[in-house]
Image (cartoon, rainbow, N blue to C red; front, side):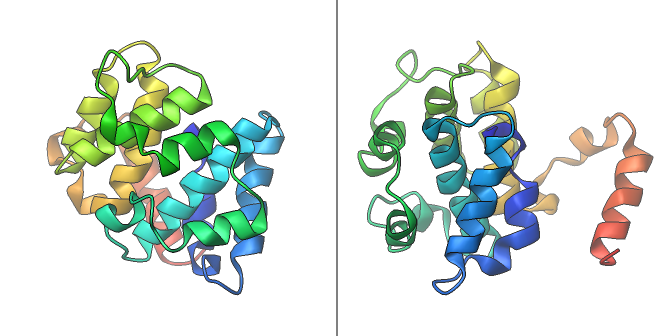
Length: 184
């Protein structure tokens, strides 16, 4: 469910505040619960949504990937992270491991760790996504998760023009973006 999470932090990033973060976290969990109701998945969604919202709100990549990021307390005050998610986050396994120990599998814990590894290592949108998909295995999942992080960090302008030019249904996507930007 983390591969399709971006609409939640995009729509509700303004709720990622000390006062409103419980609503924000509930929305992130609910986005997972319909299809992936395990605590591992819901916890991963809460963490990833928080990171995405913080990046959208202008916090730095280094700050949100730190195990001492002050806003991790907000997550824990709402509900402790699942132990496997906490291991990735607080022990920053994505910073200490390398392939083949980093795996881009379909399991939520490995997908989260692999996407964070690629994002942490990268200096640009395309570098992050290429690191992620080149891990292999379930590369579309890893790429989708990392692409959300890269998009939140480097924005639409960070996406290489040649990638945008080759999008399928580009006109439909541009119309949807125009409506979104207009608030409709």
